[in-house]
Length: 356
Ligand SMILES: *Cc1c(COP(=O)(O)O)cnc(C)c1O
Image 1 (cartoon, rainbow, N blue to C red):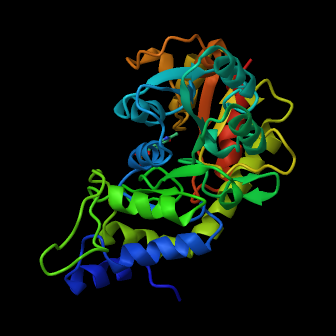
Image 2 (cartoon, helix red, strand yellow):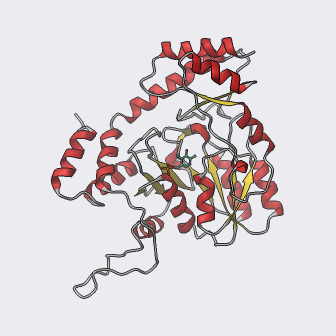
Image 3 (cartoon, rainbow, N blue to C red):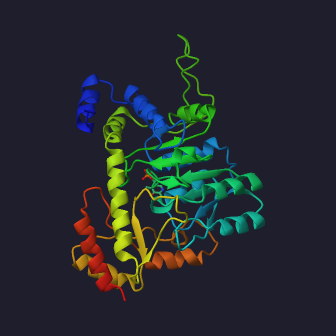
C-alpha cells in the first residue's frame, strides 16, 4: 500500500530535513508523470505564488495590461498588480462561468499594450483552450491558465497536461489536492522550469557552486518555494486522488440529473468531451439570497464563487455585465468526496422546493 500522508510526514520530521529537499523533488516528479498538471511542474507555497511566477517567467512586460476574467478569486488579478501591470477585466459566458473569448478579442482589438491573458477554469469547467491558443498566436500575447480548480478537468477528451500554456495550480486546503498551503506552476519547456526553480528561492543558483562562492544570484527572485512537510502531505494524497475525483464527478452528475428540468440553471461544460474536475457545483437561481437562507435552514451549506472582481480596489475599469448577473444568481452546492448520493438528493429536493 502507498504510504499515507501521516507516515510520510513522520518520515520527513524524523529525517532532520524539513525544508525544500528530496521529498519536494519526488512530489514534483510524481506530478510530472501524472496527467493531473502540466509539464515540468515547479512546486511553490501557494497558487497565488504560482500565478505570479507564471507572469515573471513568461516575461510579461511591467507596465503592460493583463486581461483577467471578472468571475474569479482575487489572486488571479492581484498578481498582475504585484507585477506592476494594469488589470483589464474580461466578461464571462453565463453558460460556463468562464472567460468570454469575444470579450478578450474586443479588449485586444482596442488596447495596445496587453502583456498577457489569464484564463480561469471556473469551478473545474475547462475553458476553450484551443480558442485561447488561437488568440495567443494571432495577437502574440501569452495565455496563462489559472488551474486552481482544474485538477481532474478534461478538455476535448484530453487531460490538462496537454495544454500548450503555462499553468498555475493551487493546493490550498479547499482544493482537490489539499496540502494546507501550496501550489505549482508548469511549463512546456525545461529552461522556463529551471528559471522558475531559481526564482521561487530568491533567485539562488547553486549550479556554479565552488568553495569560494557557495551560490550565485543571476536574477532576483521571491520566497515562494514549497518545503518537504507540505510535499509529504501531497505525495500521500496522490494515490487516492483518482478515486476522490471520480467521486466528485459522480456527485456532479447526480446534481445534473436531479436538477435537469427544474428552474435551476446548471452551469456546465461547453463540449461533450469536456469534463469538470468538480471543484464546485455552481447553479444559477432567481432570488438567490432567499434560496440560500432556506438551504441554510435545512442544514445545507452553500458558497458564492465569486464576487465579481469589479467590486474590489483593483483599479479595473471595464464593465462586465454578464459576470455581475452571474454573481448575483450563483450558488455553489456542496461537493466533497465524502458526500453521499442520498445527501445530494436531499440538497436537490430542498433546492427544487425553494426555487420558483
Ligand atoms: C484558490 C485560488 C487561487 C489561489 O490559490 P492559493 O493557493 O490560495 O494562493 C487562485 N485562483 C483561484 C481561481 C482560486 O480559487
